Image 1 (cartoon, helix red, strand yellow):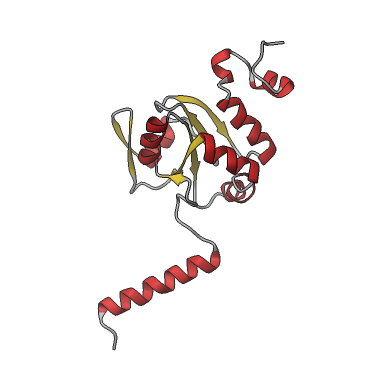
Image 2: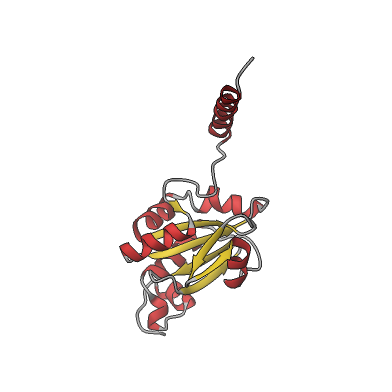
Length: 174
């Protein structure tokens, strides 16, 4: 007979083994993904912009975004060098965050950001102010252009994303 402690340890080892072999990981997958409040803190300290990935466990396109877009070498490099990345399970009512001195459950924060579908990607400046929200799945090539547009701070120069894509810089509007 096993003691309760031994049963708990065996169950834990079995879970770790299962997760390792199935590639399943927690909500903040990979070493660069943070929780919401940790991400905001880090961004403020490092003066980096923030990407918040609002996802749901059941969302097929969220998983495709994780596997294809976020794993793309150029995207991963840009994200790790220039952004603080945050994953937020939009439907997890047990989790809460503090944003702009107010406490929200994850679903409440999701609603406050205007998210209506998944995946949705919110870009915030280093102070946590919303720059823009990008709804839906985005392929790696287009996502890299969005990252560059945000990183180059083109929105501050009143350059449209369409002009940025056409000219590949934040120069004067055409």
